[in-house]
Amino acid sequence: MATTRAQADARYRELPLPTTKDEHWRFTDLAGFDPDAWSANGATEIASPPTMLELDATGVAYVGEAGIEIVSAPDGIRFEPLTDDHELLYSLVGWDEKFAAHNASMWTNGLLVHVPRGVELEKPLYVRIANSVGRGSLFWRLLVVAEPGSRFTLIEEYASASPGLEAYTNAAVEIVVQQAAKVEYVSVQNLSRGTWHFASHHAKVERDAELDWVAGGFGSAKGKVRIQNDLAGPGATSRVTGAYFADGTQHLDYDTFQEHIAPNTTSDFAFKGALRDTARAVWRGMIRVEEGAQKTNAYQENRNLLLSKTAHADSIPGLEIMANDVRCTHGATLGQVDREQLFYLMARGLSRGEAERLIVRGFFQDVLDRVELEPVRDALAGALEARIPQA
Image 1 (cartoon, rainbow, N blue to C red):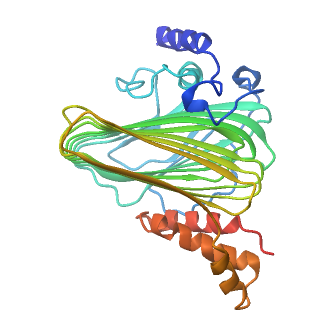
Image 2 (image 1 turned 90 degrees about the vertical axis):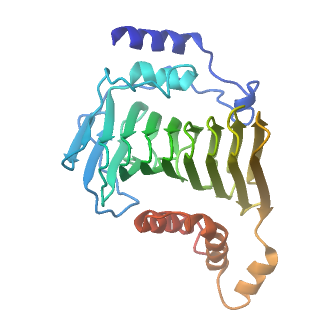
Image 3 (image 1 turned 45 degrees about the vertical axis):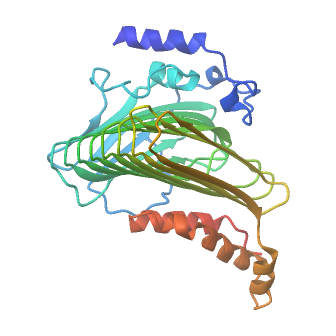
């Protein structure tokens, strides 16, 4: 695989760093950021920062700059370090984009999750990725294969060893959901405010298969997260639920793509975010329906709640429809906290912080209700409410 690494590295060197002149980076300025300026060495052990999630997991893996540790793995599946020679590696996330190419050329510690045909796991699988090296870089790769008829939950949590850590993380996730399988994939990011975070998540959902995807964004300084679902077989279904909260000078950027390739497919995408201080959020969402994908049913929405006058959000929904028998809709909203609601709650003895927490909880409730796994739902709700000051 040395040739593959060399090709990816050559492509990385060839591609320029994106600028605001590039359409997909128009609202995210990387000026002053150099991916090559971050060290890849320095860790002697895998960090163990506090977790957002209290889980009873059947498989557990910890990842850091120092390597990967498989703590437990259930019988009958492959939950093991990822090797360079897997036939599906790079099949969804290759090296045609600057940061994906950097990941393909540099990753060393990855995980393979391969669940055989018909296997159903009652408890979730869990992997924690923690950066711990100041001015360091962490490259992470995950490959998930769900064989026909399998059912399981995989939870991925990104964390930092210390709140003030300055670092660069780069992740690539490939998920293949084969015929009639169901996968619940949860990715929660709570990295330090000094971490630049870039990630490419790409899933392929085949005939009559289902992917239930939950994304939570609370940490990092700046970067971009790409989320793509390919509805590749008739009857394929994907549901993506996202919740994020940014404050201070944080800048969160989500670039999402729902591609309907086969007929009779369904995608349902709902992202909600709250912002305060001078934080910014960017969401660019595209639904693309290919010519043969008749009877497509697709929806996407992004709604933002601004908790300060200096917070800002950009929502750019889009549709590309090549078929003539489809149902595709989208929505995007942006608004301040309702002053009447705030006045009503404070008039009944609540502090401003308590009132805002209730309003935020109400704003996110319909998104939280979409999360099937209770510990994940509770963790997201707690993380959202914790960002509101007490006073």
